[in-house]
Length: 204
Picture 1 (tube, rainbow, N blue to C red):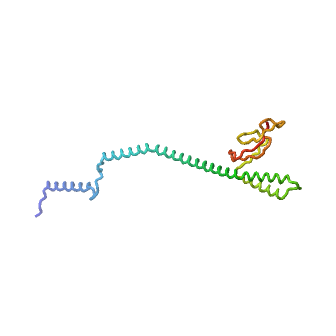
Picture 2 (picture 1 turned 135 degrees about the vertical axis):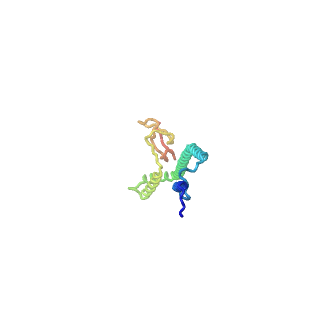
Picture 3 (picture 1 turned 90 degrees about the horizontal axis):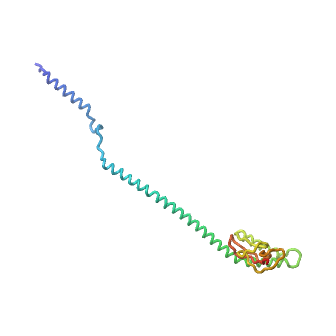
């Protein structure tokens, strides 16, 4: 004989089944972290990190002008060292050239005297000795010119005690006083450095 079903019990079972189905539908899959609520954040630690970053940026901003100033000073100092080195090299070169030329000038003077003597000797045309002396003289003069040595023969110019050496004075008609009227020995200079003053006769 079939059991009779209690209507109230059946209704309670149906309600329980509906609740269980609803809970199963809302529950997340196994192993999945609930997304409705996020993990709490440690606000104090985050605030400390922000403060540390701000302090680092502030310190970097304060040091940046110092680094730039040091860099500019280093560049300026290096440029000054290069300029000073170039000046020292140029000065040493000028001293070396001047010393060499001073040693060569007596020989060049003797060539000039030999050429004058040969040209005043009797005989038609140029002697082969005169021609050879002139070639040597021209080669030496050209070598001096190429290194910047300038010969000065200031005849007709005003006397300059810084560049000329007066060995005599003589009155010259039609010429005012203080003019170079005769050059006994030419002078030589390198740039603005007088290697040898020209020996001259000056009008009185």
